Figure 1 (tube, rainbow, N blue to C red):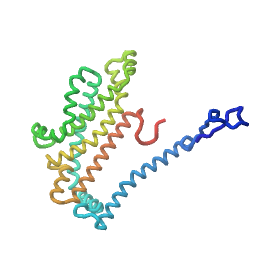
Figure 2 (cartoon, rainbow, N blue to C red; figure 1 turned 30 degrees about the vertical axis):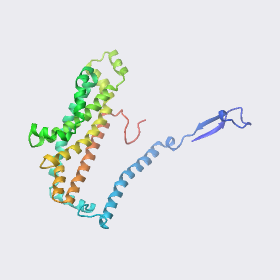
Figure 3 (cartoon, helix red, strand yellow; figure 1 turned 30 degrees about the horizontal axis):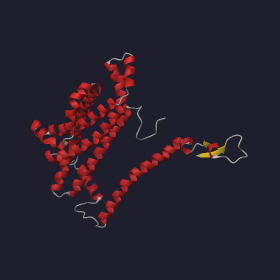
Figure 4 (cartoon, one colour; figure 1 turned 180 degrees about the vertical axis):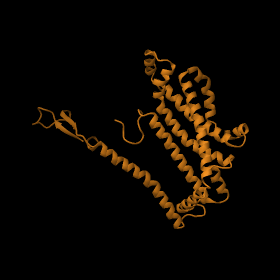
Length: 296
């Protein structure tokens, strides 16, 4: 809140535009920051819950009023009941676990290799000059196009699925890591050299804390893409998993089961992405938070 006050010595004169002094008065955000933040957070959570809930209710209404063909688009209540029955019967969990197992294994392998190579290429210009053109060319290749290659390499089973996820995650983490290392100001490196930091100390106290926030952003994006890739892969070359469940139920015209699989994929993707985000907040407490109370 601002108000215009005349400068001293001009009380009897009408203040000119150049003689006015702007005084900013503290508003609710400055006077009651905790209360303002809680209200804002409550509003954000309410909107996050209300929008999907409203869409589900509209879908249910459309199914009840026969605006949609429930043979193709089953009502949410039907999908929920079928998913509950399959979960109680133990028919759903093997597919969920198969997808999770492949995602976690591939994500771990891709993250480690992508981070190490990105760190190396960001630190050594000769390594970057030697490998970056080749990796750039491989990056633009659709990853699902590599599935036949992995099938020839590993045969049927878990190998091709894990390799495909690892390859996809690798490129996201590699790009974000290399870019983060290159973006570190040269003054940070110079300060480490002035204090006599060795290679490990330079990594521990300069490269790691300066690059980790950006690396974790890439890792979080890779988490969602990993779920997308494994579901597409399971629809092509798997005998279990959520992707196979979705594709197989569609072929048998069991659309309620198909939507159960889709909902499970959405839940797995959200939980996995949130897990990576929480790990990032734990590993980088100094970085700005995308949610929660702002850091002072």
